Image (cartoon, rainbow, N blue to C red; front, top):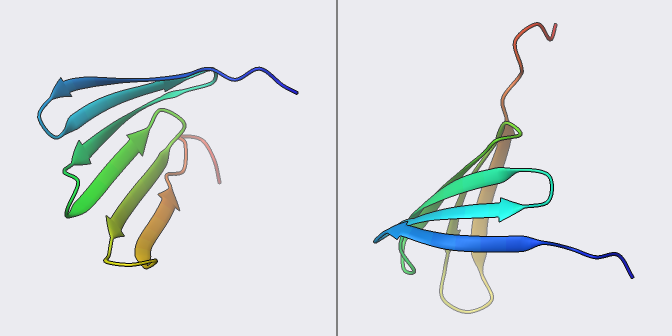
Length: 68
């Protein structure tokens, strides 16, 4: 079983700093409503938890400079 590391810090109300072994990310948003996460690896995720087993998520990845 691999070892994992993940830690989340609340910076301000509605803003969290998430750290794991390979990257870090900042999440903005509250429990009820949309959340936006931006990762150091270039991933942007917008998600919205809907009532019941429903949820909506859109993930995009930014291209790095020099990539063609």
